[in-house]
Image 1 (cartoon, helix red, strand yellow):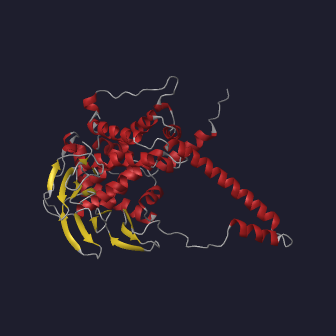
Image 2: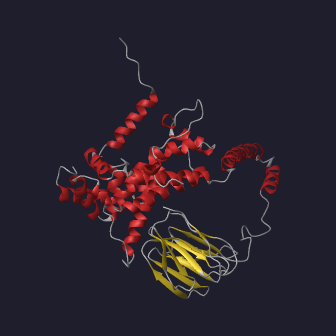
Image 3: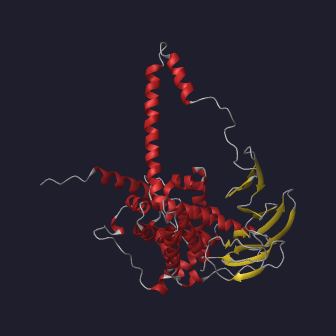
Length: 243
Length: 196
């Protein structure tokens, strides 16, 4: 009796799994899983947040993604055609034609490669810190601040180091600082700029624009950045995510 | 918005007539469907991969509330970057990489900040596990963060040292040495049968 051979793909997967599991302590893995049970309530909250984030995507995001893939495919095809043409025409006899193609497709720059479209500096933050970029895209590192925000008129910078919030003026002088655990999601109110909202762990807190009057607004909040409603000076309406 | 599944009852999903259940589709098909506007595909990806991201965050950060935030934010971030996701790669490791790195960052930040009015360490996770698991959690928490993270990624997720090195942007030799030291420390704390 002959036995059917498994599909090639199944064999490859099986070998890869064996390689991956070599050296893995299965018993330790099982204990790790048992030691970290999934909280159904936490799963439910996370599920709601995930579905809300998906529903809040721009209406054309999916269509734009498809268009973007088609544009990429067309660009790749065009690049292949150009490369073939280049290979054909760049013989000694075709060198002048090749030069013409080069000048047509890649004209020498007549202006700087990139500048900011506006006058003011650009603020960039990430895991590695924060920077400002001037109009010519020259960077100036602000420090190991994973989050930063401009004040309403751009006269001050709010910088988050994780355990301390700093407010610096344009000269780099720290005007005030505030120490709190696990600071995240900072938002400076527009208009008069007299309020700063931020999360400390899961707490939602408010502090005045001069660093005074730090107080608790909500003991628990969703991990989303609160948003100030634009409005007249002296009026401060904040939108934030419930837990 | 329902604040929890426990409050809202059993989670149900509405499927288009004739559509295959999300659990039957591959990750690649689910991501493609999600990009085309199919919400059940996101539901499928969540159910398949979020629990593991939560476990990774909990074992690295050793804080139940932080793990929930980290895993939730990781999935929300993944949803936001779906267009940039390379569908030739599996979705699960991509999500758990985001969660692991965020858990590491969170734990480092907690170690730096001053404990001014900081809440007590959340012990709720220990309330629902048995004694053996509590011992393992304590032993893991005693490891330096760098060793704890690679032990979790290797033995819970079964990532190869090369995959761990790429995810954490470390040299492979560094990953291997941290794995050895972490397992040696667990063995010393828990005994040979716990981490052989």
